[in-house]
Image (cartoon, rainbow, N blue to C red; front, top):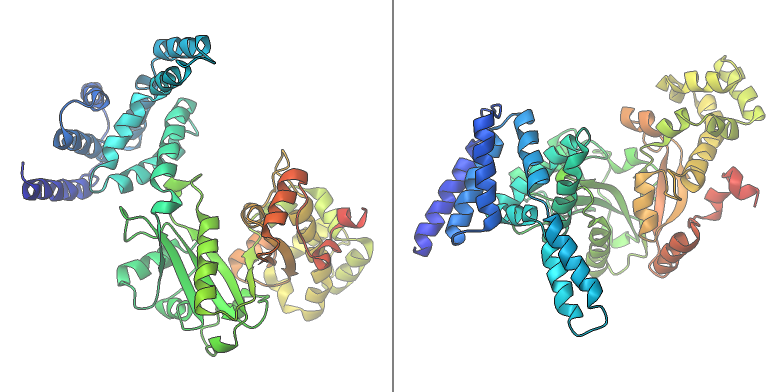
Length: 463
């Protein structure tokens, strides 16, 4: 078959792929049996490359036409009927144990590895070969992550798909690309759609974030060239930014980048839920820092202005957090200013209504206890097994940053107040300290933090 014929065939497949999800339908017993037979053909790998792609195309179209229950049954079929053969695995493992320490060990190891490689992986790999195959698998995992919460038997398929995606989306295959106001409109629309930290409200807002004193970078995969996998927004300044309102002010004058000595990473957004567990954010930041240093050699400081997305949720479930943060003197002063009960319930009721921000004296009275609460949350709260409670903190501290400064009323948007009482944090990346910070965190659990932050943490004061 000629290359031109193959290309035309694949183009036709791509068109069918896109149209096939318009009318979802249930999966009856006859259709399920037909899919089972198609999966067996895929698992056997019969025929040549074109046959394999056609089989995968038919399966993909069948999947996309199904309703949620049908898709769950489809995935359950792959998970439960196309795993490794237990007898082959047991035999290969026994042989491997028998020949350990002999020249035959390496052949036995290869045999064991082959036995453990399930038909599920072969099926998934055939999808990957389609024109829209990578996109299909990423979206399929979104479904899988939803279904696995109710059906634990899907976990094995999810682990295999996550492992395969981690290989296919290895950072070595990704392209770092700067996104500007002159990038294609479709890509700019996706920035607006995917922004997960600070909502982009308009095209004017977006243009401000892409101005000459800003930078936006994304990682792209060659099989998904128009889809940013993750992107970061950067502001070039001459100081450590302490609130996002100023950074996002559309009417603020454009900063002269010749005076810039600080890069502020103020938004990092993962765009593909199907790639959960596939980490490349740390590589993104390192590559962006290298790019910025090349364009602006005078830059000396690299910091974030980051949210505390679970602070309020954690506080509402942790009564002692309020008791540690709001000491008797704080309670007395705030109660007098706000005319509310001088107890935890009074503070919670007061902070439930954002009207408190409009009272300057009351805001000042709340600053110390809320900063104290945020410090305790970041430096002492855990989610079990020495795991930091805050996901953003896990990311930055795990990559060698330190908690540099806590910022009161740094995000006064409805989302910022709901998540963290408006608190934000600067994580500072000092290249000379990154390795030591990571090693200390892994070996002792000690979090790198400035003295100004530690002074607000009750547990640090007791040491």
